[in-house]
Image 1: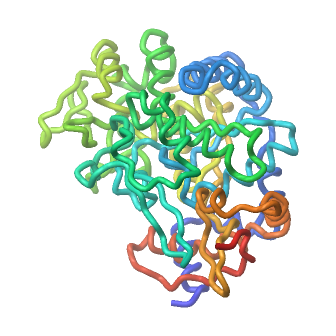
Image 2: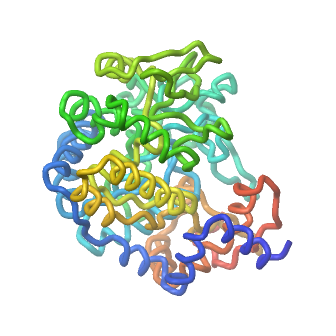
Image 3: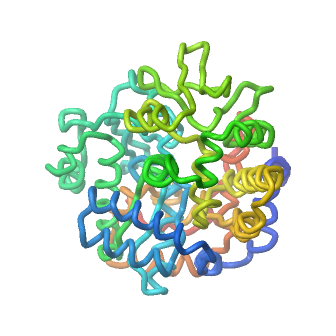
Length: 452
């Protein structure tokens, strides 16, 4: 298949991506990020609940000064990216967007980047949450796993922390990050990811003063439910515990990506279950979340949900997470090439649910204002070159091969390369994700930012 045929297939499955490129493709990457990093409208009281929850999590993991800074900036720049997987931030899929967001924030006088990353991924995901990777002198990819393959089906959400003995052949430049005593004392891999990505980011050229706040999306939603939606009669409370709301949720979200499909037996109802550290799909049956295959049953009552969340026996589905973050708390969430499509589906299903329940006109009006098509996903910007060959650079490549010109070159590339040109090399990868079939890669035309 040629590039036009690949693009046609991708656009047929991802119409919002097509619209994005048609409307913004000729903007530079930096101009597009600046255009879509505007202030948002949201309910003030709810906004405070979310900011306080994030502040508490950051205080625990990154300290008081950073927590205070993040909370203050969220008051004026209420925005986050949900494009990333909760893993060591090395994959170009995720690092490039955060690099451009850093430049965008710098021009606005902001020093924090908030990423609420998906910890629902298993360690065998193609983005490699199992460890770190970079390139050698011949541009060959080197992978260093933190966990053995026996954990490959375990989601990051409940994974125990790595130990020093688990890490082999870590580059000397990174030992102070991954062998930090505080990080090694952490109990979960999720917490370690937040701590190590924060420190890793400061080693990137020009970013020593920038704070990368990388948190588990599912943990933040869990904390919000526990603190604000078990006792108070909020809409989230009604969805969780009101049988009429539950049945309307079942009706309106069936078939929506990120929720569930009764026909295709995929997804889950409101929460994923966890058994033997593996994710299990749950169905609604007589006011219970059940999995007959896995002999799992949980009553949808306040006490049982509270206990299961505290014990990490369940965690929020993608649909529930975005209902809480985007549509209840009004947080604009930038996403990847898939999210900018499915988030609109989730929004439409949520609006239908509210309409059928009746009496939620104000809530519906507020929800309609929330954007779902902000792209913060997969594109090629930073590249690593040798002679005539170039590959997308990992964040570790940037750290290992930087020189005194790297910062200036990166800013220049972000201002020069258009959104379309940056996304074009990703089309074969999008095609593979959508169809499961390999397509011929598009040559990278971006001049190498760094060299081996």
